[in-house]
Length: 517
Image: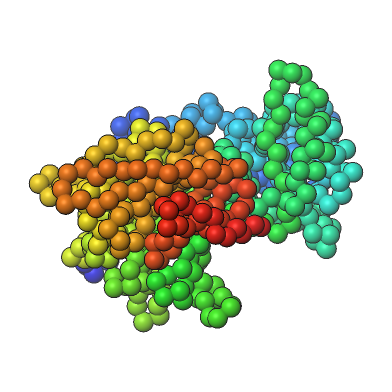
């Protein structure tokens, strides 16, 4: 952006901020305005109870809660149109003595399905729920509380079964004994960091949890979950989440750069962390934010293109980050939001082929981004009907056919030969061996508890003929990775075990080492 245009843009932003509105908004079509209002009003909201929680008076029930950050209902107070939509979506609660709907400060506007109520310790939570249940005034769907005593927690859970029959999620956060008294103070607010975490957990629907569970989660599930199992057979219990006192996100990927001096990690807390490796120690040097969901993978580009890192996640976006400037600051230089579902993995091509990045998505498409002449271009093609979990480039020096090849005539990628079939369940990962031999190797890992190793002799022309050998495991296999020389295959799976495999002189694959957690 030119300096003059940028200055004008900043002035426009400043004017918009002062006016607290978008002047042209009223000129938009009604359906677009309604969509904007609905998106703003239906954001997840986290409220924390303020002690004393309730005060039953002759004039009615006094509920004291405060939102963490800006409550979404504020968007509904902007105009008559937004308020009309808010009345359709929200539940209105009178907040106290003498309150009336005419007094905005005396009314709570909530969407029960999108509202999380943080209740503090079990003692505070019990008092709060007793009065709420007696007056049926607040339909609770998502609750969070801290605990440090199992007896109190089980007693509370027993009452919760009948007080909140429509409960959808219960998040139980272990409290540090030194900080527990603070949780019961009347003026102890909830931090934005924890509120963001609770919102992510309440909205989570995947089987893979976005956090590291409490070490005694199985025992807690048994102690708390049994009460919800005693309810009517037609009623299903809430999703239970048990968090340790120190909340850490599940790390989904960790990759060293070309020289092994920097480590990039990504996790379910929507962040990417970059560490500097010095001997056996590491130092956090940067935390990158921008993704709106869990970040599944990161990948370093070859250093000939600079310190460039790619990331992809559940939000369907691919970000390109680069370290630049005299202060070596990391900046996001490119966004690719074209996929309509989660982007599961990204992979850089061998540097001889150019600065190319392949992106595999659950929408069934694969995109190839190319950085050339200080600009990014992309090509997208449909690969699999049920989504793409992995993608891998062939070595730049390997002759012969590959599964997808770039066609210069059509400027797109086309499938060559037949698809490699044989797995009976999801294929979670695929890796092409970087071997420089005249034989090509592809390893595929599947949910069907097998790894298939496909081999093909290099041919000067025509479609490659692939042969397959199967390795059987006791658990679903998640990842496969080749050594730099391309002759050793590492396999990891759901049983927390890593095994190394190597081909012997007879062409059979043998396990040469096992690493167990």
